[in-house]
Length: 138
Image (cartoon, rainbow, N blue to C red; front, side, top):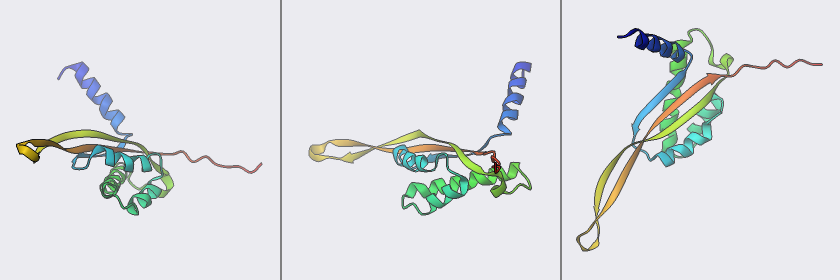
């Protein structure tokens, strides 16, 4: 590996140490349905986001809840001995991108076939901790 490539790899590795993320690939739900759930939790504190996802009737919220739990466990792996409640974790970013599209044919009248697109998505969640502002009585 060349020196520039090695330096860039080390720089990227250092930047990734401060990022806490989890990714879900090839989820068989349409990106449009998943974005509705992602928009609900973007910017929320982690505990509140888990509560919102737990009591939401959408099927996509179950997958998002598991992904958020995975992101929390990734955060715990990098921060040994720190409590979640003390760190004020929140959902910094949620990306929902389109993944592969399975194309199927559905029989239609007069011998024709209509195209069916079975969509899937990729979801990425980033967590971050908020700095607690101390209030003073004046």
